[in-house]
Image (tube, rainbow, N blue to C red; front, side):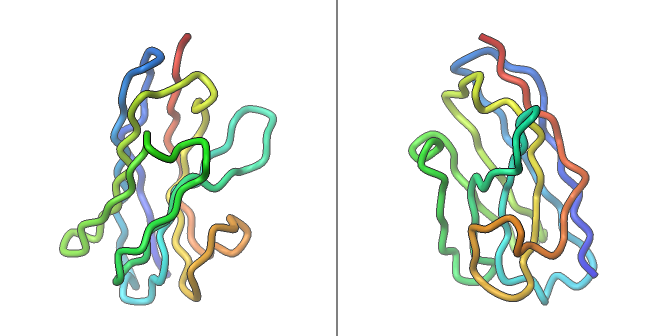
Length: 123
């Protein structure tokens, strides 16, 4: 099992920044890909960004490219999401997730999930 705990959400104005953190524990050696996935009110969960646990490959959802950056600190088993130039449409609950099998941008393939952290961007 892998346990994931997010932190760093909050309320910011349009154009502001937030930095989310995700601390992983347990069988971290089994992780293949880590991702941030968000869910806006009344909408389905949406892929935001992913990073391979060992190789450092990254991918982003088109609407966040150039504004968000995913990174990791393997020594501390932590993944980060730096979110800049935030927009109201970025509002939602941000989940950290781990995939133990493959590289994927499909939220349905992720095995482990954190409890989520709320990010709210006011206009």
